[in-house]
Length: 408
Image (cartoon, rainbow, N blue to C red; front, side, top):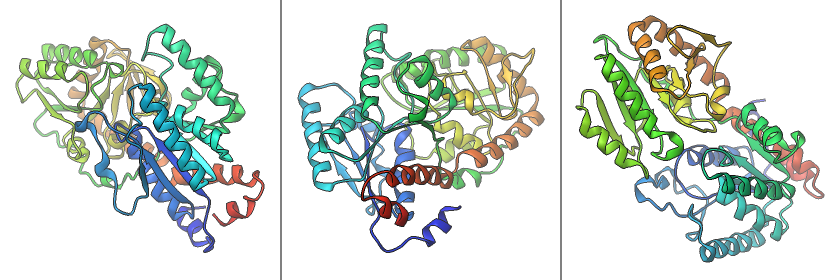
């Protein structure tokens, strides 16, 4: 049943209030959560978005908001740990939930997941959901901190009704590897985006024989910026017809500043943080991802929607973003219909990129498969319908909310 059809069946009775809590407007999650709140509102839910402070103004994505979005700002909530600010943020969240009386509180990202779930439990919120857009239990911190994080997530899961993950790989991590929650509590809900702006982009133009490679994201250690730069260095060494466009900013910007000084503009263009992702993707033939750990990289979805395949490490949820059965080839990596997965090795990346530069016809075929894959798996309509289905099943089991779930 489509979103439009469901919307036509709504009554005028106010729907359940869903409170979405996100630590800050930075990175990939805001690109999902903000449009999702609007789509859920069209489905009959009342939605409110609660968020905190983005510590680096260059990465602040509050430009995504419109005057019609219902937003509650909690300045004390931020990524950094501060006992004083965290306690104030917890109190503000608790007070908001006690006053608003939401039927559902859904938290997104780690800090919001801790503070939001504790506040929801204290406020007696009937349904509490947490979304893992990725997870920080591997690759982010030392072994001791990672162990403490896993223990904390297991405790928080005890008073979380449902946990959303982005793909089967994340589900296996949480259920089998880290034992955070049971299979019954974890639901796979892939990302969904408004793909139309990217689907409208023209196919890549490769009349000059060059291959343009795009990378987009935050410049942070988990993205392995050092590997990205090593891939550039190795590729430039063996091929004079490959160039890179990098869009992003963050704590490791000094690595990109040094790289820009090493190579001329025609080989490497660093745009910093940009709002115009469509322009970046329109100028690329494919995208790469060098991360050590990932949820579902939004840039790769956007690129696929525009008919651009990707080359990536097999990190986290990326392994669930490939079409068909992979085949290992002499050029390196495991080749799928829409992408290539390679080990985190600069020479392996370079081998694949050189192969793609020499074989534009194959690149075109992979791009068409990528566009089909994105349209089948990552639409905003599909995401909203998945949320609606799970929300309705949870609301029906709550006393006094069955009628609200039906009308919503």
